[in-house]
Length: 205
Image (tube, rainbow, N blue to C red):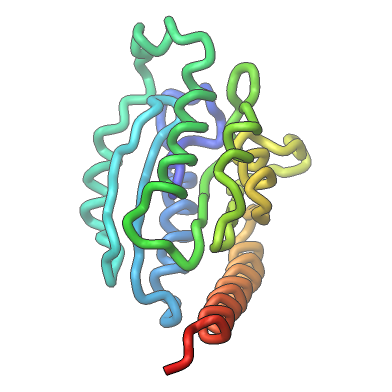
């Protein structure tokens, strides 16, 4: 899941530097030979909508994703959204919950990427606690060009912490390298552990 949004939540456009950084995160994943299937969900918090979805594919369709990003219209505000006092928090809570619990196939991991997200009133952590113990790890790659200016945990970070996931701050290319090395190592370890457990409890024939 990747939030295509500008660093400045009040910005009326998605800056090229932000787009390039987020696409770079996806390309880094796509190049890893250990990842063989991808489900990509691109969303935008300002518009509170999913802008692109690709289910269980062997390759990420970057041209189709790029075309979908053209539909973003960050300079306008929907009157319906203005009337919803905590619409952003409700959208984010519902979105994350549905994506991690309603998939047809259990993933080896869920990775959320994007800039910091602030929501009015904060998130109801109880909603995520009701999800229960997940059988796969959850990671948050927080794209933050100036972490010193905003060091506090954001709404997505709060959700990931409640889900017992891990957060990584991505400010420079080297951060992406080290974060991905850690993430892929944990994914492999988690999958190996699940397979070993399944073998141990499998009935003898």
